[in-house]
Image 1: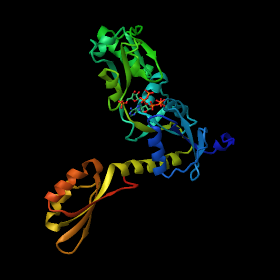
Image 2: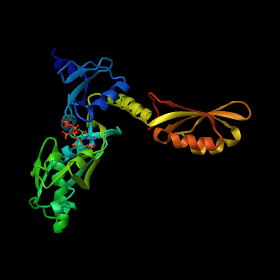
Image 3: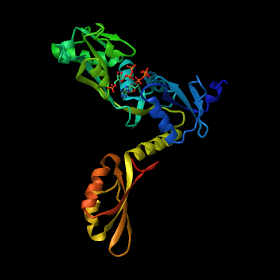
Image 4: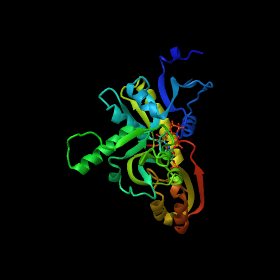
Length: 310
Ligand SMILES: Nc1ncnc2c1ncn2[C@@H]1O[C@H](COP(=O)(O)OP(=O)(O)OP(=O)(O)O)[C@@H](O)[C@H]1O
Ligand SMILES: O=P(O)(O)OC[C@H]1O[C@H](OP(=O)(O)OP(=O)(O)O)[C@H](O)[C@@H]1O
């Protein structure tokens, strides 16, 4: 099946084809009712219910495709955008704009050295071998460090030797290829298992929705952004409902102010029913405090989807 001709009138949306961001992106598309069928081995899928086509690409390549403009929207890590922008600085018409922080894929790009060695500060790596998949950001980082150390603003040749590897970066020190590495850390398990410790952070990252400077269908970009924002917000909040005596309502409102305000329904002269959005990670504490304040019949519901102000 030749899909390419049918892409002409479609907004293209790049999604990581594998790796750490892939499944979370598929869940987000599902939650946003972006319906598609991907044929096996095909990296293009037409969306059934919107004038949109998904392009499955490596996360590292997505800033290039969106930055060039033919692909209007994309999801990748902020680290990948930063790496790309070091290599190809954005102009008025090229490069990408960040639309939304998607609040998954959180990690840090960190300088790491052997735990039992004597390289405790990033300056100790100047003039040594550093291995990474993020060569542009690493060069920028060591260039700044070397300039700071020499006290000169003049650009001289980089003393630190930066080498690229595509994966399993953490093996480089043990194999004698590197004195230190610059790699992503989330839980820190990979780093600790390799006998390494983080000595500095280059950038902090999470998955982001990006768009090109002039997408072919800005209205559709806005619609997809609103849908995705709704799914992200729904995951972050729960809906809490409780009953309370009217005389205790002021205290309860302080505990659950809501995003705009709680919804309050009268249950006769003395009692009210309250319904309010609460941050999911705070709900246990909020329920404890509501109980103390005299609330009863407290119920908590998941929010499947929502449209609320940013
Ligand atoms: N351990 C992690 N925790 C959270 N996010 C991560 C982690 N590792 C990578 N990421 C994010 O996911 C993006 C893609 O990284 P990943 O290593 O999955 O890419 P890949 O190279 O396409 O896949 P693979 O490693 O399977 O070849 C990174 O740029 C980063 O933003
Ligand atoms: O701090 P942690 O939770 O252990 O995660 C960090 C690891 O995750 C990423 O690699 P990934 O497993 O995606 O594979 P890769 O080494 O092939 O890139 C990253 O490059 C680290 O190796």
